[in-house]
Image 1 (spheres, rainbow, N blue to C red):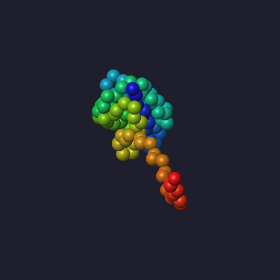
Image 2 (image 1 turned 90 degrees about the vertical axis):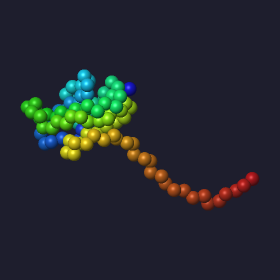
Image 3 (image 1 turned 120 degrees about the vertical axis):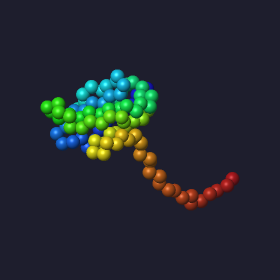
Image 4 (image 1 turned 30 degrees about the horizontal axis):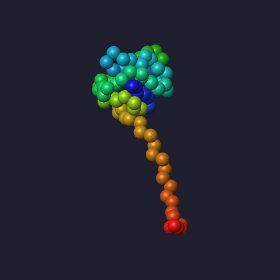
Length: 104
């Protein structure tokens, strides 16, 4: 059981980020890197996101995010402070027509 998390719209100058909940942490990741957390989240609501610049100064921090569930993909938007589940795009349905129907 696991989940993935990435961030977007980090403040200018940000180079690393970290995610954590309970005693689980991602460690410092490159700003464009996805955290593939191998541990169960079990609906945690204490997810913390920290973002730093090249001098290790915090450029963004948010706590109390969630719930986070296993086997889901998430994205955190630093500009809005919103954690969202990434849902796969629905395939485009192309209509079709039956031109002729033959019964036997």
